[in-house]
Image (cartoon, rainbow, N blue to C red; front, side, top):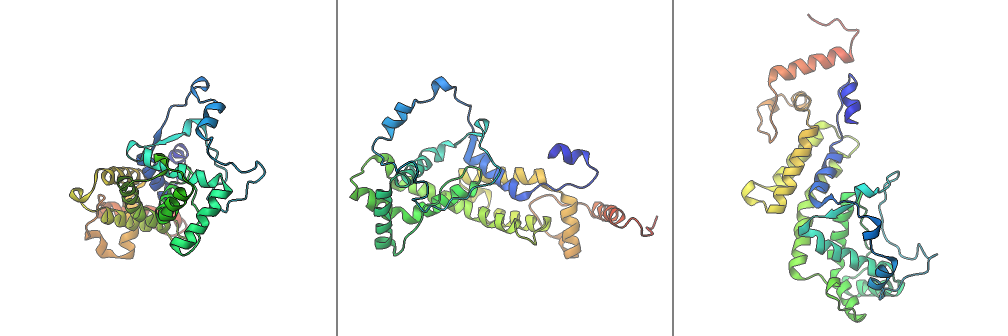
Length: 288
């Protein structure tokens, strides 16, 4: 896409929502070298690890009513395998394991449903992670934190006491921090993806994230990592002169307003506006 944009004569604006997706992926995930076949675990080794899980019949694909968001036309390739960054790798692995232990057993899931109704007042569904959508990880963690009391009660009643199926206080805090950081990013993404959104909407959405993340002294190390990557990815897509032109047309006073990203000179804005007008209305008589 970048190569095509460089060759065509038109102004090309890269997707800001995809930029946020890449920014979050830069922090949460990192590329992992593909493991050679001989180094991969055998089926017997995998079976030994999962021997206590009750698997449903092979033809019972739809027995569990799980909300899963899939992206059509996307096939996960070996070179795109990711691993979670060190700070969240283990705790998110726990969350996935806990979700899977119920997703693989109708008996365990049935008991969880009863505990959800008894403890939380209603039945909740798991949100499965889809690695082509960063917000599926966010939604999975949000739902897990909500269902955590019912999950732990169910595991206890099933006499499952393995440490890797329980999230302690420190790990819960990591998950809560992750949700707090990702909530404004999720809200900004919805704003950018709206039918009426434009590059000025994206500018306001990024400003919203900047405000929510706070100043340098207020941010945690993880927040600083997210902020740096979001800023970097947005700069790759930031057409300053056209953003400022659109902002000026909406409100001429905006030219003097403070903003996080660099502003364009008024002469550059006027020049860009004249060029756009000539291209869009070539039949008009333009002043020399």
